[in-house]
Length: 475
Image 1: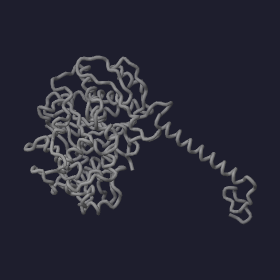
Image 2 (image 1 turned 45 degrees about the vertical axis):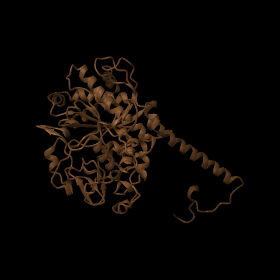
Image 3 (image 1 turned 90 degrees about the horizontal axis):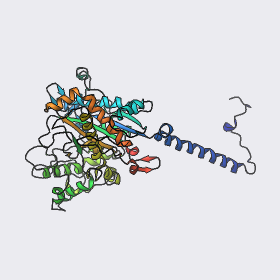
Image 4 (image 1 turned 90 degrees about the vertical axis):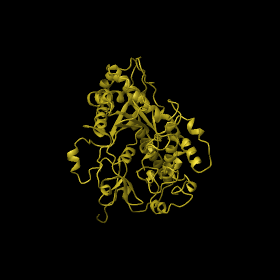
């Protein structure tokens, strides 16, 4: 800038003698500008949450299970990457299959149609068309809401093309994993948390559920208070197992023969706390380390950088101890587990146990049953089935309400028919169920198991006027 040319006032370097009252006036002006800017930010946040004209906005992540391949090269194509060993701890779990029916393809097809239906509830969606669908379920008014919808993974049905990729499992891994350049890439759970959903709907099938699990099943993680009692037993602080046999969780998932449900519960409790399961003799199986799962995803509750070197030593009286006697639940994840929000998600609730997670799962199942019966589709095995109870990873690693559902079984001719011919009906039931969980719905009376039609009270998850438990999950 040439000498002698005047600077604009806000760039001027020349010191000016302050006039009387000048500083006070400037301070007042700065305060007013700051107040206006802050108000604009607050109003902007509020409007982003209320949508257009005060319409409530909700975020839903659809999570169709699996998608990748079980390949022999576990060192490059596995899942559950462990930073302590620098290795994948297991093969990718490809999912169930029977003949030409594959779980990954079935659940993606259902989720894709749910996404298309929920798009009608989107910010620019044709809600009148969705309201016409709701009219098949209710005679009551159906308020406008906005649902922003995401998918946790891409389409997996083009198997031949996917197999040609350098890393066929890259888009489908559940956990974070290393890129060729050494950086960390987010797995499916981390991508879900980046979306900050209010609700995650995870869809799975299985080959066979056994005589006790026929139907459609909620998949439930029990509350921290229940797991703490298991830890007390393992530490020798409590001997009685009455808390288990008298609980709703007594039908614990038995993963294989040779152990009772209670013994599997104790093994899963050890896994939940120390990341080591138990052997059949109830000793800690140090050869079966499953990794510090809360550090395998990118979210607000992962330990700070530097944790790896500490964890490798498994120091006593810390969260990294490799013995139950020396384990101490401390750190961000364990503080989260003791919060009231996890009790809301996983304890008591509309179903009597399992919290909002159980209600969301069971309610969506009831809406699918309603949709099928309305279409004159009935069968003895078409029913809400018994919940699965264990320490499943995904419900533990999101702050969202987790509706985790087994849609049915591939060995059942009836469910094979549903998965090939009635995907539209299943998807409609899920979409209407999601709407009902947010806005409530009064279902038209129908014979058979009826949806409750109650919305989930999301206000109890509020942290402040403009922030909630769902918002703080991302780092």
